[in-house]
Image (cartoon, rainbow, N blue to C red; front, side, top):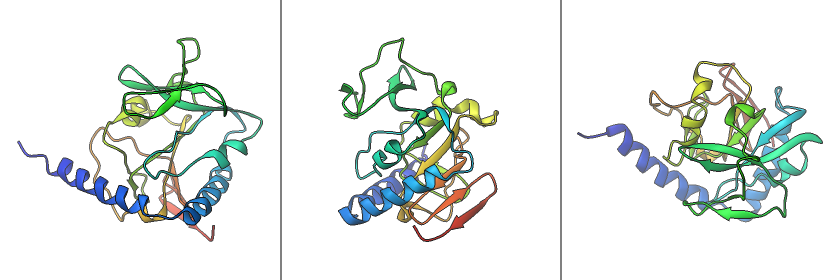
Length: 204
């Protein structure tokens, strides 16, 4: 049986990842600074609690500027594989990391340090492509969709925010029944508030 949506997504991932990797250092730094400002300025940006970013790979936007400027009562976390879902672990620069089976660094965690997706106040998710309605195309493993499937029938928190370069925005992404929509997406060009189906576009 053919899977037209799956084949379309695989090709789209390849194209978008290639375009993302072609961006130069100056563009990346400027985008990271602009996106950090947009994340901190979100109407629902938490002033306390556990918030999660990710370890940037494959041309993804680095989040260290956002991490270093979080409110003092927020605890920064990184995702860690936990069975078939994600868990989250508090992490600061210099804390030990291990490499998971995908070659991505994650905190060296114990069962006592693992936080459930439900424990988070806000989670920033990487993406390969997005649209202004909150549809997200990830790497294809389904980790965020499985981990936050409860958000399909429950309001925030945790708030789910995607970040990507503006070149990763598409007019429309065809979604699957298991996809979990984002509450907002931040790019260097604007913040897309998907709850209101609108975008606040402005200069970075």
